[in-house]
Length: 157
Image (cartoon, rainbow, N blue to C red):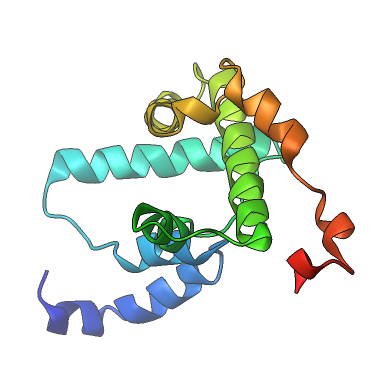
């Protein structure tokens, strides 16, 4: 769809409203990248995902991404050999825990929200080394310092 048509349909205002519901910067960027499609099959799939998301929210009010952070900058820095600060490691941990819980909810409701469940399965492949089915996550979990314990230490500064 051409930019003039999007403007006439007040699409930027729609995106602004949608982005206001984003829990963190990565979801805001994803919302901002949405564009109407002329592909009927893709449009139907996106509409079905939306219906499933609304249905999932009615089934489980515990699904939330509040507190999650965009890990891309941290991953990029670590990829280039930078050491992460304690607060960044805690942000990483918290985001992974939130992601794991969301995936568990999607798995629990897989028959009711199959498209969203498939997306959750994709996130499992991306983060499989952090999942509780491996031995790494429980061991790493014991090593994290609670954020409140960081106050007053040099790591918190």
